[in-house]
Length: 102
Image (tube, rainbow, N blue to C red; front, side, top):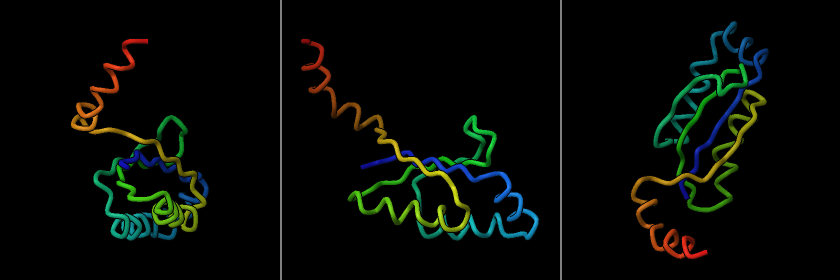
């Protein structure tokens, strides 16, 4: 199942990684292993350094594969939300038609 994974890194932890020069390389290693479909960085309204990425989970146990590196490296907060592509939404049309009858 395709998920929007959001990661927020506590400011002081991120600052320490910036100071010692490891922020970019650590994030790079995590992303290289995870191979997300897409990745974006910003603040997500939290004011903390944050990332948003789309990952495709084959089974729930893969949450550990994607989240643990962020927990271990940064003490980050991680969240997963199911998302759909336009093709997924089109495939859901029969369900929408049934729901419209309520």
